[in-house]
Structure formats: structure tokens, C-alpha cells
Image (cartoon, rainbow, N blue to C red; front, side, top):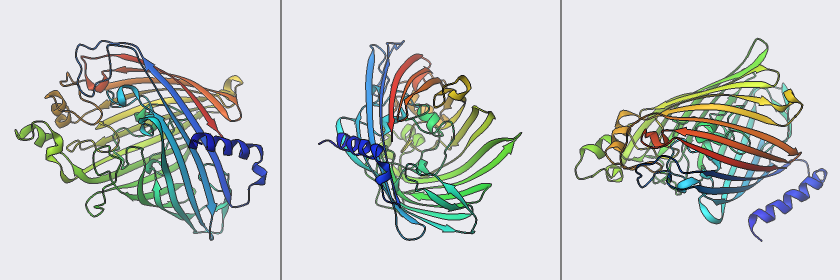
Length: 431
């Protein structure tokens, strides 16, 4: 029996009788399907990694994940997330730097594929006897947790599980679909093709702030599935400060981070300058560094309304390696809870994005260079500008349906192509 059907059967059984679960366990399940399409748009030319512009295009993605967790010795737990994925993003998940389907990072095959999304150990060390309640959730055990604590995570997971989060713009399964809204666009976070990596995270938590540090493995090749075993030369590090505060009685969070990546990356300037490279950036690869910084802010502004902002930057000298081809990114938006109009559980979101490239990166693409996600063969540079809006309709306790609309101006930073309107319908199941 395929994993998705097996997982769904197990999830339905759990939903019918969660009371039978033993203490010390957490068990949840999610399944998300996204159908996304666009019609033909102005496209006088195209390259190897262009968004298809001459015809209508329709693609879908599907993911199913089981979230299992078990308490071990005091303060310790282990979490395991088997995951099945299927489908593809538009144009093979190419042609837009801020790609319009965040679930496409997990998918990438016409047939179902299994992956161990997460398998990690968590150890909590209390720093005080004062506790607060913690609800059962995905990869979270119910019970009291110290208000001041040190937490370690070791194993396989997504860097963005613990870094660069946002209350209103963080999860393409329930919120905005676009890549540069679910995460900071210019954070080239360490990950394999599916979005996961192996690493270590340490988090110091106090009631008013959280300080986190992580070090992770990088992919062996740009956007590759295998991780580089040369951990002494290839790794990504991030340091983040999360400040909690209240403003006018409304809660807010401001997260700022810096990061340093090292990997066997190519150089844009070398690929341009070296005739032997002939704009093949792979021929310039060497172990070198990329650094950058960013912030993620969310703020309640009314009982059922929140605002958010993200901004990020990287040095733009080395090729985009693990996430997307974005060197500067800014996004902002609003999220409204359906309680305001008598539909508790519904959500309306509206956001805008502006992304850019470093001078060396744009010159490389203008000369005909190709990245792992964009490359039209030439370039009349302009910032990639995107508007996204969605409505999440809570059909019942465990099912949400969401129409989504995005408009992309200058796809892949090219003024000669687009704009293009992209439509989607998402179904999300969660127990």
C-alpha cells in the first residue's frame, strides 16, 4: 500500500481515538495538495530555465507527512517524520526566483517518493523551576516546559523549523505559497533538494527573548539531493536573536539573524571573466564563503489582524546554492483572522515582494549564464515584483481549502517577459 494511503488510514484511526494514545507520545498527520496554473503571457524569447510563456501550464504537488514523537529520559525526546511527495512546480520549478509554490521544494517527481523528512533528538535543560504549559502539536510534546531553558537539537530536519520563523508568513501548507514569503528570500539556507539537512541547533529561551545558533551540512551540488560529506569545508552557520515585546498592548516579535555558508560554489565574476569557463559556473567551483543577514517581524495590530515584514541580503558573489536565486529581498503583508467576520478558523492574507540580484549575478545572467532555477539566455534587468493573496476556508475541524492568486512582474528579473498571473487551489488536511 502506498505510504500516503497507509498514513491517511493511520491518521483517521488516530483522529477517531486519540484518547487511546499513551502518555509521552505525539502523533499527527498532514496532507497538502496544490493545483497551480497560468495562461500564456508576453514572452518574446525564452531560455533553458524560463517559465513557459507561450501556452497554458498546469501542475500539481502533493505531500503527506506523519509527525511522530516519543519522550525518552527527562527532558529528551525523539521525533520522526516519514514523508511522501509527488508532482512538480510550474516549468519544472524554474523560471521565477521567488517561486509561486512552496510545496514544490518537497516534490519533484511524477511518481510518489518517500523521504525521511525529519529524524532528530531533542534535549531540554531547564534553567529555572518556573514552567508554562505546552500544547501537543506537530513535533511538540504536551506538558510543562521551563520558561528559561536551553534546548539542543541534533539530527535531520529543516533549518527553517527553528530559524527565521514568522507568525503570519511561515508555512506554504497553511499560509502564503510563495518562496519569498514563507522564508527570507536571500537566506540561502542549507538544505538538500527537499529542503532538509543534517545539523545541530542550540537555543537559549527566556520569556522575553530567544537566542539560537545552528550549524548544518550543505548540499554537494547546487540544489542537490546529496549532502557534502566534507563537513570541515562545507557547512552553513546561522545566529539569530528573537526579541518578544508588546506595543500598545499588542504582541510582537522581531527576529534578526546573520549567516555564513561555505560550500563548493562557483563565482559569477570568474565565470564571466574566464574564457575557458564559457559562462559555465560549475567550472569555477571551489570551497568559498557566502554571508548575509536578514530580519523577520510580525506584529498584532488589532484583535484579529496582524502585519509582517521580512528583509534579507547576501553578498551575491557566489552562485545560489540551496534555496533560490535572490540576493536582496523585501516583503510585507497583512493576515486577518476570520473571527472578524464570523468565520473562526478562516484566514485572509495579502502581501507584496520585491527581490533583486547583485551586480555580478545580473551580469552573469545578462551574458547568457544559467542558474539552477532561472536563466532566459539574456536579461533586461528589473526587480522581480510579486503580489500574493489567499483565502483559507476552514471546511471542518481537519480540512482547509484555499484559493490563491499571485501576479509576477518581471519573472526571473526580466523586463522583456511577463507579467504573469498565477492561480492556485490548495487543500490541506491536518489531524
